[in-house]
Image (cartoon, rainbow, N blue to C red; front, side, top):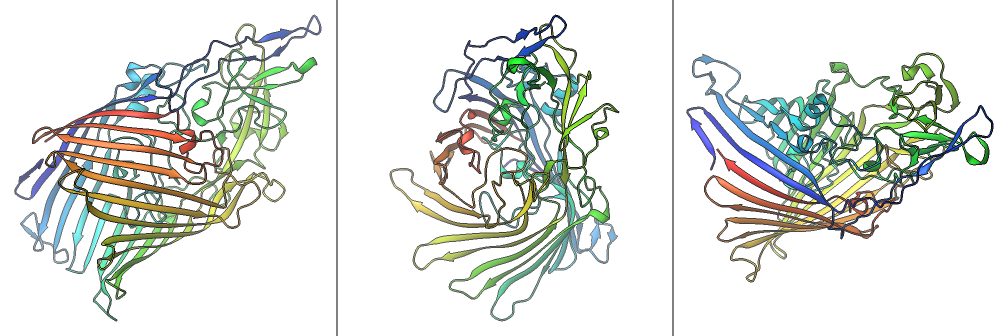
Amino acid sequence: MATITQGDFSVFGFFETREAGHWGEGGSNLNSTPTKLVHPTSTSTFAVPGIAATKTGGSYDFNHWDLAEARQLADIRPDYHMIKNYKFLGRFDTFLIKDADFFAFYRPWYDAEGTLKNKGRVEPFTDAMNYTHRELQQEYFKNDLREYYAQLNFTDNFSARVGKQQIIWSEADALSGTEVTNVVNSRWHGVYGAESAEDERTNLRMIKFNYILPDFFRTANNELEAFIIPGDFQGAGPIQAQTDPRNPWVIPAAEGTGQTVAAPFIASINQAGQRMRVQEVPDFLSKPMAFIPLGPGGSGDFFDLPSTIVTGIGRNPPKTPSNSLAHSEFGVRYSSLLPIGNGLQTSLIYLYEYRDEEIGVSCNCPASAANLGPGGIAIGRGVFLFPGKFLHGRPRPGVPKAGSLIILTQRDDRRNNFFGLTGTYYDKDLTDIVYRYDVLYQPDHAVTTTDVVHNPGGQAWTERARFILAGDRPTYIPWISKQHTFLTAQYVNTWEPDRPTNAGPVGTSGKEREITNFAFVSAVNWLLNGQLTTGNVVLWDIDNNAGAFTTTNVYRYSRNVLFGINAQWFLGRSGRYTDAFLLSRQQRFNELEFTFTYEI
């Protein structure tokens, strides 16, 4: 299929173009009001904020379409068999290494969305600037050598893999509890369309060992795996687009009511002095201001409110983990086929990694931590005023600004313990179903809390457990196709038994339930004599009555040419702040995507 082989060298690859649009984002109503000025004395001026235009939209709003993707990408995967029968390149005897391959995965791409739309997906009245050339390169150009590793086989039982790679130990399809190591990176495509789980994971430099053990006590397929990541910290995960409102893949997580940051500051003010309706991360302003009512009758002054500065004043370690052996991460898995029924495959997993970081308002940050020099006035825990310093530029005419307001945060990156259990069971006697299970226990999971008496920074650690049960079964449905339909169903339960008062997710607003329930059902069909592969998935957040319908369809037109059409439509109740999976808040981000692929 698209593989070129020449001796010990082979390469697989394809070129692809993707065009996608979002619907449901809506437009702006023409109901804005300007800022008003108040002059209580001849020498004083205060302001009363205006109101920016409100928005329309939702899952069933098809009136406004927004280009989200015009991506051209390549996928090239060379493989070189460099050692055979202890001979390196067929010439030198290696003594120890019996067989070895070198593999790489190169995936460059260019997205014309940022070039065609100078402000991306940004909405009116947000003070967004056109992309600079540097910003375009960061967001829409990717020269990505995703994987490169050597697979070294010392004996038939002992092997190692060295290089940049992924560790997939889970048996679950989605929201896996035990898939912790390679964090999801959705900065460049969210969770949409043709992007696969492999493309979303963050590859890490590591050394992984595999040792196959002999059968004993009626068990089989016994295997021990272990890895070390020698100081390659790439983020605690998940890595999401949440800093630039121009990005079409910014996560629609809840972000307060859009009215207050810390009383009595009224935030979400644009540079024109108008209040904005900021309830989700995509509503962020490019140059936000805060309003402090210091004048008569509720009037007051505006202050620039830059993006929160992460100081790195964590407890353990004090800074972002450096790339050193002292900050290495570890993992181990033992797998076996147990003599239960037709054979119960099970794996025990332990991980010690920098995942799940704690972020909260700084309790002891000095004003100098904002790198603005002296002059900061502490007016609250981690909150400072800088009169006369404008971080978003000089005031506009008719919009008086008095300075900048900075809220400092601190981050605690530390290695946490993760305990996992995963496996499969094939019931061939009664149901002909492959059952899969996945369990994670995490003693330390970061959350936010309003209990500042016991947690002054507004963050805390709590226990979390996740339980997953899934089943796969090929089923022949004559009225659908002449081939089997592959059915999959999965249920996910997440339990936080001792979460603190009013616990919420880190980095955004909202609340976390003690127990959350999530499920999905998928069906894969091969139609038109196998030329058309179609997959349809229904996701549902049981607690919030929100979900999504996803369909991916690929038609092989010829040996090398494939056409695809994909869609993701979010449905159900919208705007829920207890939505752990964001389904209720993504109803302005429905997507329709077209793909064209040419295989080498």
